[in-house]
Length: 216
Image (tube, rainbow, N blue to C red):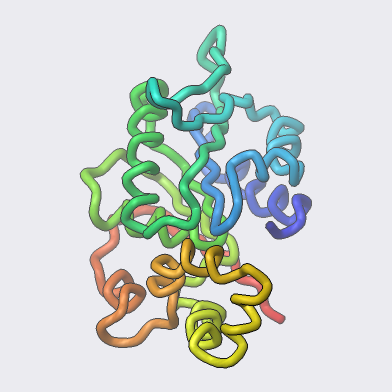
């Protein structure tokens, strides 16, 4: 993840959007090879709490369904939640999980959601927005999301078919690549016929889109 202080500055945008009387429900969506608790260990949630956001807890899947140990005693105005997605799975699979979480949170809060997504989590959120029956959303803020695909996916895929793939085998890395390979294929740079090209040519719902990109 990008350093927590940068996240705090970006997420601070939500403090400026909407009036003081407008309640906000923020859902933090992690990216590839990450987990929802990273938002907490990277001090993002602490930054929100210092600005009077209330911690709504962390949702995770169990055999009995989605579980969140936090039970808020009243209905705070501004609340944030973290969630866990199967971050190496196909975008479609992650979007199904995201739908479960967002439906649960929306039923609890009953107001439009604000989504913040890091890395591939932004692609998951966009896929969900373009394919899934709508839950009201005001904002999608993406951070370092490969909206036109990423050359790293191309490189990773291509290297495994070269002699370097043998080195990966010797180091025991191929199982890790194979587990993420379908997702990496989806995140290849946009060109006609691939996943990112398809997604970027889908109609997106009318809401506030903000994308923060890192320039090297």
